[in-house]
Structure formats: structure tokens, C-alpha cells
Image 1 (cartoon, rainbow, N blue to C red):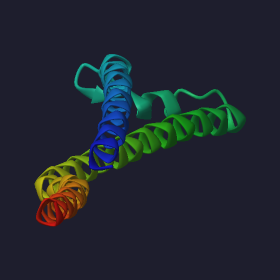
Image 2: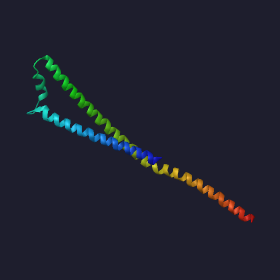
Image 3: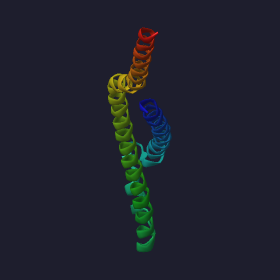
Image 4: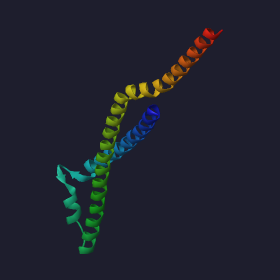
Length: 134
């Protein structure tokens, strides 16, 4: 029972860690793109991008796209934080289960053993009683 819980927890932990790696890869790509396209000679080129609009419609479109990109980046960061918190939580659960496992395992293993010993004691008493009768 405990082993099954630990195995399930380890599987969920591995899945979360893989998801975290995927998010980190995406974040690295985004940071690289932000650095590559976001700066021009040390100046923020997003402002240049907005000010380079031909008319108000073009300005609004550019702003809309920049906002969508920023929202996507924010959501990616929030997801990364949530996954890291999930990983930390699962690691803590695993440590707790591993600390608790020996005591629980003893109880689970001792139950059938005690039952078997009780039955053996009954059989021994019965055989001793029968020997006395013979």
C-alpha cells in the first residue's frame, strides 16, 4: 500500500519534472528572442516599434500583438512557478511517506505474522493436549 503510494507519487513527480524542463526550454527561447529582438544598441526597441507605426490603426495592432506576447510570457512564468511548487510539494510528500513507511510497513507485515503465530500456538496447544490424552 505504501509502496504503491510512493510509486504513484514518483511517477507524478517525474511527469512534473519533465513538464518543468519543457517550460524552462520555452522560457530560454523567449528570453533569447526578447534579447535578440527587444534591444537595439542597449535601447528598448519596443518603443521604437510602437512609435514606428504608420497610423493609429497600425499603432493599435502593434500594441495588441505586444500585449498578447507579454500575456503569453506572464502565463508561461506563472505556469513555471506553479509546476515548481507542485514539484516541491510532491518531494515533501515523498519524504513524509518514506519517513512514515517503516512504521506502517511494520504494522502491515506484523498483522499476518501475528495471526500465523497465534494459529501455530493453537496447534501446538492442541498437539500437547492430544499427547497428554494418549
